[in-house]
Each structure stands twice: as C-alpha cells, then as structure tokens.
Length: 186
Image 1 (cartoon, rainbow, N blue to C red):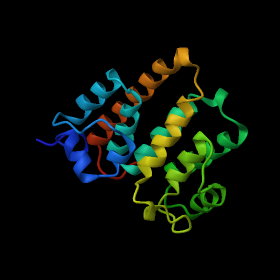
Image 2 (image 1 turned 30 degrees about the vertical axis):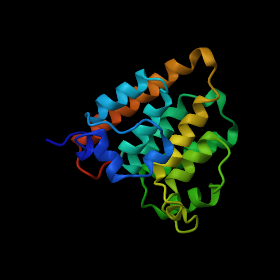
Image 3 (image 1 turned 135 degrees about the horizontal axis):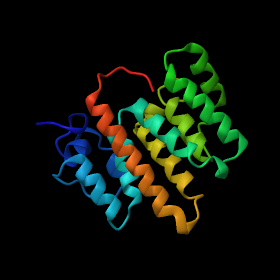
Image 4 (image 1 turned 90 degrees about the vertical axis):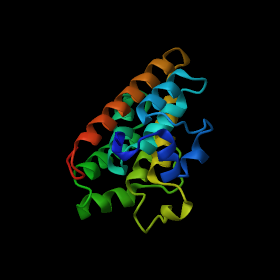
C-alpha cells in the first residue's frame, strides 16, 4: 500500500524526481519515506533529511514548510527577509491571487542570496518571468536551499536541535498532506 504522498519507498521518490540525487548524496533506500527521512536525520549528514523532506512534500506545502522554518529564525534574518516571508505567506494562502503573484514576482531575485530569498523564489518557481523550470530542478531545490541557508545562521551548539525541529515539522506536514485532499488552505 502506498503511503507518504503516494511513495511506497524513498527509492520511489528518487525515481519520480531524479533531481533529488543532485541535491543529496545518500543513496535511495527501499524503506518507507518517513523511516528513510528519520534515518537520514540520525545519519552522518543529517541535513539530507531537510533535502528529502523538501522533495517529498508537494510544492505549495514545501514552500509553506520553508516559510515556517524561517519564521522560527526571525532574530537571525534581516528586514528584507522578513518582508519576503510576509509575501510568501500571502502567496501560500492564495496562490491564484494575481495581486499576491505580482507582489511576489516583483520582489523575487532569481539569484537569491538570503534564506527567505530562496523561499520566495520557490514560491515564484513556476512564474514564466523567472524560467526556473528550465533549470531541471523543482521548487524543492529552492526550499531546501532556503532552509539550509537559515540553519547556517544558527549557532553550532544549537544547530542540530533546530535541524531536528525543522525535520520534525516537515515529517508532520508530510503526514498531514498524506491525509488531505489535493486542494487546501495553509
């Protein structure tokens, strides 16, 4: 029986989205996705659990997860990042709203340099203005980059705890997404 958003195993996700193999080095395993994610977190490179969650989540949920992760790091972010997070929140709540799309598109930098800039780019990924689909990467690539860039700002002593909390939040989102119809609010 398929679980976690239709993937029986982590290997199924790697087959469905080959770009993940360019963002992480751990080989796909024939174990359930969330079990694999937890093993990554406990492994040698726990940051790969963030990468795996970013690719496992549906695009809009992944953008929201990135937003929520960075919202826990506001004291480490600049004013422009906080403004971008507000735009991302508006977009996630109403992705079809032309006003939100326009505001996000005008604020996004296709060469992001900050954590929230990556998350904002992930929200605007399908905007033809940016042509990000031609990169061969899905929006999950930018979600992953944004979260990891945020984690890089956390003190070394606190980093694993924050990383674990972010992955826990990602796992919860995967479980919720697996239970919901394809359309919903955040």
